[in-house]
Each structure stands twice: as C-alpha cells, then as structure tokens.
Length: 112
Length: 115
Image (cartoon, rainbow over all chains, first blue to last red):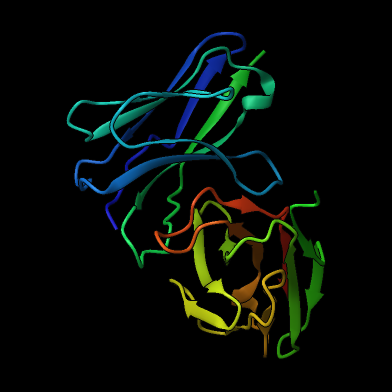
C-alpha cells in the first residue's frame, strides 16, 4: 500500500478555517484518498474521500492536487468538537484489496 | 439503527486467560474487521472478513482467532492472553467487498488490559 505523510499535530483557533495536509507521492492511479477522524475515546469516523476532483460534503472539503501527490482536508470553521486525530488513507480501488492502513494521523487542537 | 456494537467496553484479564470480544452490526454489511490501537499509534488490522464463512489475516493476526458464522457477528478470540495484547480494540464494518471496503463504520471500542 502507498504511504501517506501527515504532520503530527496542528492547532487552530475556533471558528477559523483549518487546512490539514497529506502527502502521498507514491499514489497510484487506482488509489482513492480517504479521510477519517477519531474523537477522544471514540472509534474513527469517516469524513470524506475523493479520487481526482475536489469534493465537498457537510463535514469538510477535500482538495486534491493536480498530480494527486498531495491533498488537503479543509474544515471551513473549526469548532471545539473538531478537536480530533485526522487520518489520511489511500485505498486501492481494485478487487481483492481489503487492508486499510491507518498511520498516526494529525492531532488537531482547537483553541477557544 | 444501532450500527456497530462492541461488548464488553472494558475488560481486565490475567495472563493466560481466554476471552472473546463481541462485535455485531445491523447494517447487513458484508465486510467486517478488527483493529487494535496502542498509545500513540495508528490502528493496525488484526483480521477481516468479506462475508459469512470467509476470514483472512491482517497485519497483526498472531494470538487472535476469528470466525464469521453469520453476516451480523464477527467475534475476536484471545486464546491465551498476554500483556502485549493490552490495547483498545475496534471493530469496523462496510457494505462493500468486491472492491475492498467502502466507508468503514467503527464501534466505540473495547479496552482490554492483560495483567
């Protein structure tokens, strides 16, 4: 599986936008980019995913570089509830691939 | 919908004891999996299943057994617990199997301590 690189931690002020970066320079053409987050003492939850085009949903936006070697998860207005560990994961879209590799992620702290 | 339900939430074992962590989902998901999470680490895949009667090993399968007799349930068995198995365990399920798991739905976790 292709690897991802994320900063260990980031801080944001409440109600300001947050840009969480992820590098995946060895991504293949069939890899989807997935983001999950894990709130304290909870299981991870799905945030968003994309292949080539930028994606938006009610939780966040995903901006994917044109060469797909990096992506950015955008939280438009950080709230205290967004304090969590955010994981960027590459998921091979072909048949027979069932293992998702969760790295250490980025711990986001939100300052009131 | 209950989603993914794990029991127990907390368990303390002595070295050498056996136990089963239960996982049940009510979403008719084909794919189910078990992860463990140690302090400061990401999640590591232990075992997974793409349907009833089918299981396979993940990244760290040693010391754990699984079975999948029904679509809904995917128990994780520790036959002889060791202190190295002290961890938080997460069960996850997904609707997709043919092209790998889709969006994963996680349980709340089971915190296991082995003395």
